[in-house]
Length: 492
Ligand SMILES: Nc1ncnc2c1ncn2[C@@H]1O[C@H](COP(=O)(O)OP(=O)(O)O)[C@@H](O)[C@H]1O
Ligand SMILES: O=C(CO)[C@@H](O)[C@H](O)COP(=O)(O)O
Image 1 (tube, rainbow, N blue to C red):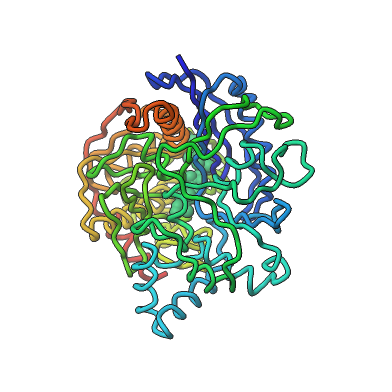
Image 2 (image 1 turned 90 degrees about the horizontal axis):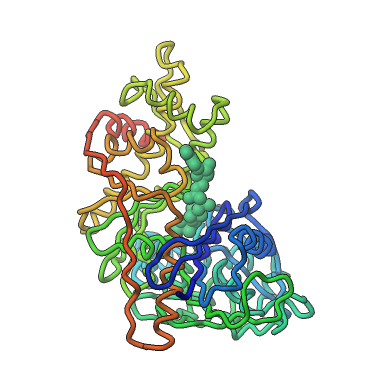
């Protein structure tokens, strides 16, 4: 039985699953931490990948692997294959003003027209997360670095390239050297750059030029859903991957999760990781000029519609810090307070916010009285506020005509019993909790198995691995939670 590996190089960590290519059975797993911060030297992702692979018992025996990763991060390379500066991640908001400039410029001074023009061109109104805004920020704030840029990649593109044996000149982990033309990506991750149109399958050099001021930079080749972008080189010093393993196209992490869950139109995934994401697969992307919905691509040829918040699992991490409790204690506390927390409301813009687009906002705790000054009320308010932001995202998807037939809850914080109990109250819908797992890495593994099959049969379909929904929690609508959240959110 050939084995395949799926990698999730996410914001907080690198996670690897090794699965049987035919049955999808889980064979081994490993993970390793990434550093904190919104700008990171990508070499930490390489080190964490090797550490996670070692924890997974090595990858010498896998026939194919694929990399899913945090979207949008700007990995700018010079002609020698070095990063010109630390990568700016999706949750780095310093390019918020650049996003506004680019919007207004495309609308010839009319912001609303510009917002719609970006949505029409690339599926999304610009916010600081999108790569194109980071390139404009680089042009204006670090012109010497901007002048050195010879290629722009995303985190998953860069890690795939390094596994294939490319990298900085003279680096023993990069025997093939800095061949920038060997960079490759897939539709899903390219669609989050702001200079790729998933509807036409074309880069938009005019939009890249608008941001960076020039087009003489290499952009990764966009490969098809089951097309190997490269093979792993046998002489990468210290690499856990065996030479000759096929490297699949990879994907943005949300498209990876969609593939891992086997999502089809009508399915909604709510992911509570570093980002909060409400996503749906659709045959074609929409162009939401309001900016609430990103019209990205999935990893199979469909569109992937997303509403993304900056404040998700880390809101609960913050609650743990404030209350000095662990995950279990936080959940126990939250479930001692009633739905609506007796009027205590947290608007959780702890790191600014992206949906709605409020990059400079801070959080607000509203409705503190003697009676709500308790640890249970506070714990519950943090969870309700975080989930209410995501429920607004689901409303925005519905407003774009997305069908909601089955809702699944994934991501690190989905393991919290309090999140599981409160989510059906906030969303007012039945919520399926899949078996605990790493669905981005699973999607990457499924893609690797598909790539392996397509190498001998070009028409092969993605393997039919099943996802088990461990529990379906019944709808338990408690409108008070969202009503009071909406009232306070609109004051912020
Ligand atoms: N039982 C739990 N309750 C609440 N939060 C949790 C729990 N387990 C993990 N988390 C949180 O989930 C987050 C990591 O989730 P993950 O989906 O792996 O994120 P990412 O993919 O963005 O790196 C961390 O912030 C962690 O504190
Ligand atoms: O910016 C987005 C999607 O547009 C985020 O979803 C990132 O892709 C980060 O993902 P996680 O590390 O939270 O999984």
